Length: 244
Length: 244
DNA sequence: TATGGTTGTCTATATCAATAGACATTTTGA
DNA sequence: TCAAAATGTCTATTGATATAGACAACCATA
Image (tube, rainbow over all chains, first blue to last red; front, top):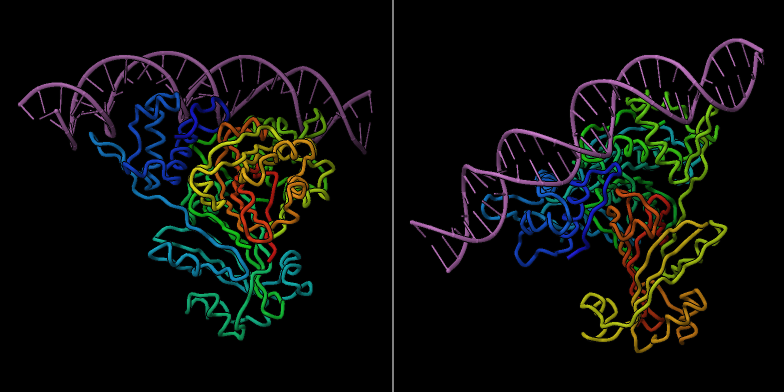
């Protein structure tokens, strides 16, 4: 399996670095044959650390629900996987996820009407000071939060989108209700940062976790911007795929 | 500016969390007016920590070359920015970077001929056991490493690609030399993880830093795979953009 | 040339992270 | 049923993190 040795002295606790590497190995399928993590003593030897340090790492993974330790038996792998998000002209949240998770949905947590900031106006190609509708949503799959998104819509065309979306639970269907038969993804930007405090609770992350941030613009078939979104994804639960 | 308060007790040192947030603020342009970071005492108050903790964070940023402290004056911002990588059918490393950095190049650090693993064979659509050429490259911009890539090429068509690439320094030109007039990006996968030990030195990262990993497949105009690559990017130096 | 604002350095203390060793408890299989 | 292998728990020690306070050194400017 992976490489040995871990860093010493640097602001990130050893047990956390080891937890990250074990999690990566699990997601990579390194332990699929047995369905179990190697014994603590073996991991301690492999990473060149004390067994107690490995135990701290495994305790963190157990806290995340990824493994479950059974005394006398070993540490079982409970959950694994990264959801795949295809990004293309036809990117939609629930669509690509449906076949990967038993339960996938996006819930509305807040909505408001406001004046577009300079940034939002620029992306949506609106005049400065134009009104927009803002929606805050959380995407979930299999009872775990996956993403937290803030979306802006031009208020003149989509004044009631919050109510409709809240009732239907689908942006695509809400658009159709409001006269947008179809729409396409114009551009997607992706960055990665450490999670900020506000995302920790919503995405059920522990501090120091990674989030992948996307800025996305959707437009109708005439090329008129209809939705600008900033989303934060729990990095250890997702993978993006761009098909050209 | 950003939100207050920082987490306590979690395997990630406070000073590191604060360093990450200050770095993010700098990249976001929060301090562009003055060109300086707020005074240590102000930051300590803002984050709710001791001034010494802020000093540790700033020392880390100084180590990265992002800020420079001047006694009696303040802490100046030295460098800032994220390189943008457009991902499209015509994705090439140096092309999109040229206009953003004064100096951009990709250097060969290792090359070998080997038998394709199951994974590589699958991506390149080769028969099991087929020979491939592997190249290890490091992409740099403005004297800082940005990415570390491992690429595989079918050995039957591209046996000499290592020599040619080493001499020319461009994959695109090496392909042309070997009869591939043009090629396109077929698929790109993106994930984010913490940096592994092997990447720390090559990418000049500190432990706990984030890397963005891409798996990419390039094919010639007949759709035949010509290159499969796994790349790691220093997440705080890059942004990916997908234009549809 | 003073003065206020800022970074640099030092001492002291409490808590967390990591190592080390020993032994108990539970499961599996010979 | 016994022994090996695995996780669970406890004590002790060391070094890194973080807080607290005080003061020195330096810069800009009124």
